[in-house]
Image (cartoon, rainbow, N blue to C red):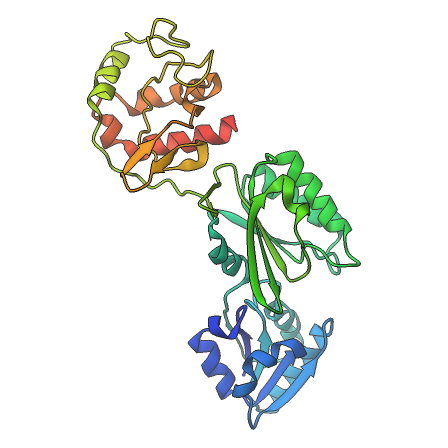
Amino acid sequence: MISVIGIGPSREDMSIRALNAIKAAEVIIAYKAYIKPIEDLLEGKEIIKKGMGDEIERAEIAIQKSKEGQKVAIISSGDPGVFGMGNVVFQLIGKYSDTEVEIIPGITAATFAASKLGAPLHDFAVISLSDILTPISEIKRKVESASKGDFVIAIYNPLSKTRKEPFEVAYKILMENKKPSTPVGIVRSHEEGVSAIVTTLDKIRDHEINMSTTIIIGNSMTYIQDGYMVTPRGYVVRSDIHPLSREFYERFLEGEVVEGPNFECEFYPCHEEGENCTFCYCPFYPCGDSSTGGHWIKDKGVWSCQNCDWIHKDKTVQCIQTKFPEIVKEVDDLKKRKKELLKLRRECIKETE
C-alpha cells in the first residue's frame, strides 16, 4: 500500500487521518524539507529523503517498496492532489500491476491563504505560474480565461529569482481584464511564520513575492472590510419594507414615478449630479453586501447606502429593468422574492462593472 499524504501548510494543520497514516507507515519518502514537521513520528521507520525535482524517482521508489510488501508513505506539503505527488504516482502506476494507492488530502495553499485573509473565495480557479513543466502559452490562456470568467484566482508559485516571465505575463493579463482596485491578498510563509497582506491589484508589486507566496485575486464583487477580503455569496438579509419604500413602489408599479434624473425632487441629487432616480428607493435594500459601497453602521444594525451610487447609474437601471417586472408584481414581492432580486443584483453588477 502506498499512502500519498498531504500534511498541509504546518504540523498544526495536519489531519488526524494523515497523522495516523504516517504512524502506520514503515517507509517514509519525502522531499527533505517535509521531514522536519513530522520528525517526532518517524522513529523506527526507513526514511528516504530526496531533493526538489526528483518527483518521478520518489514515486518509483515508493512503488518498488510497496511491491516488496511494505507500507509506504509519500509525504506532500499542502494537498497531494493540487500540484503535489498524487499526480506523479498515478502517472506511473499504469506501468505496474497490483499497486494499491490511497490519497490522504491536506489543506492546500489556496484555502490556507484564504483563512488568513478573511473570506475571499467563492467560485475560484487555482493556477500555478511555474513554467518548469508548463508552457507560457498555457499559463497565459488559463489566466486570461479565469480573468474573463470573473473567477477569484489563487496563484501558486508566482515568482522566483530566475523565473520572472510568467508573473509578468499573468500580471499584464490581470490588469487588462480586472479593475486596478480589485482586492488582492498576499500570503507568504517565512522563517518567522506567515504574513498576510490585503492590497489591490495595481499595488501587488509594492510587496515581496516569492515561491513561498500564495496570491488571491478577487472578482468583481470582492471588497475589503476592516482589513479583510470578502467575496459575498448573496445571502438574504431579511428586513421589513420601510413605509416610504412601500409608498414609492406602490407608485412605481402604477407607472407614476420619474424615470431618469428627478429634478423636481427636493433632495436631488442624493449622490451626484445627473444620477438616475428611477429606483429612488433601492429594491435590494438591505443587500448586506459592500461590493457596491454600502456598509453596516456598527453596533446599530442599520445598513447604510451612503457610499453606494450604483443603483443610480443608467446602465444599472437598464439591466435591472430587464427582469424586475417579472420578479416584483406587488410591493410585498420586495420581501417575498428577495432571493431572486439579489440574484438579479449580482447579474447586473457583473454586467455593469
